[in-house]
Length: 317
Image (cartoon, rainbow, N blue to C red; front, side, top):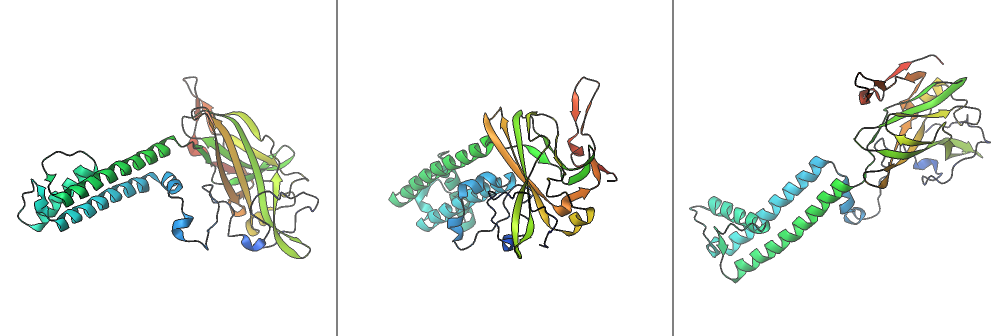
């Protein structure tokens, strides 16, 4: 990261961000666009470093369903192989002429046992086959209990259904200019008491040493009563702003990051939801103005055009 020297030394830095002051720790950005910390943890075993519950709750839906399906197939394949090793003659009702058919019927018997369906067409005989079937039935009950808990956890997990504009902009504001970005709820949720905090992170030189410094950016409004339409967060770039001396060229050539923390109360969850994101300087458009997202229609309703979230026009500053 190149050194930024345009920050007023009288502006107080925020030392409570959790990112540290070591300039060598910067990995391209502090916060990813999806809100996760841009951190990779090493020095510990992979199994120990993973919270499987959090992982299963946070992975995309298609990955979650794929894992459940593959787990189901593998378990039944394993138990079908055990039944074949014991001998399919210990499974009453199997009628097959070759190994493939025997394995296929053992597989479907395993699926019936694992899911505790038990159609009764095939039944185990002998101690060993009966013991394996009872173990599989218990394993199936426990597996479905875990899967049900994960399904419910994913379905009921409080989540802030809020989208950020792809770019932040520097736009005319009052007699000067301001840093702006826009957010909007995109689900049929009711969010109240929305509150935002914005932090600027960049490298500065102190006593000849390059260090990371973070500065709180004051907002025109950092809290609103209800988040029903879009909300444009505005940081006036005044003499008290660390961005005061920045030009268009600075945003294009220097490296820095604007980090946003947002929380709101979701009436449906009856809980506080939180989300965060960031904009590196290259994602800040200098000299632009957002296009309004909402308008009235003929049915006395307000239309919120979510496809305009990142729409802006260029202006001269």
